[in-house]
Length: 254
Image 1: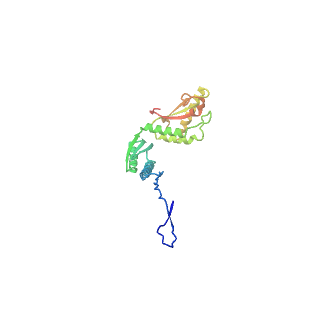
Image 2 (image 1 turned 45 degrees about the horizontal axis):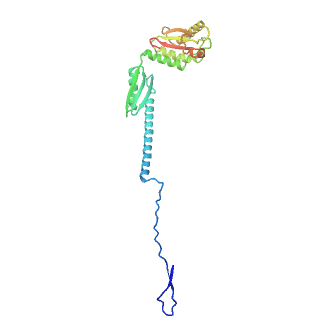
């Protein structure tokens, strides 16, 4: 920095000093690019749209499941007291498929009309079949035998207490069946084959006598003791399973 006296000072006036500053150098400003980690508006919009679209699909799926469950429940309830021997309801979108068996064509038609009344907004496809009389009798007897099997006291033809109710239901079914029914008793494979044969014959006779006392005609029953000749499962471990009473309607294949 240089200093000089002012040459313009008047007489009697103290001259002053002028300091000259060196000119500042022009320093160019540097700019810095700042990068941010945020998303662009387009990216945010796309993500929000994808989320809303996904929620929409989930909502539609849940609504469809609710509709299917509602239709299935309404149609099934309408058929609970129908004359069908058995039925199953299948819902596929707006279509209902009705499976089952009926004793007559009229019973099948009645059940189908009920299902269509409940499903007025869609179609009902019938897969119902009409069973012959003998097949209907056999189906009922099979259900009774499965749900309430006839039991005897060990090594005896005496019925257990819980078997009486089961035989009452069997007798009711046979009385309404116009076909002859084979009443057969089976034993396990443990012990002497001759003794088992004789035991099964006595057991079958006990069951037949009880059915006759319950109103079944004598000529409608054929009594057979098979002994151990027709086991369901071979081996002594299955004794309780093999010891059973079966009812077979004549003319119906096993």
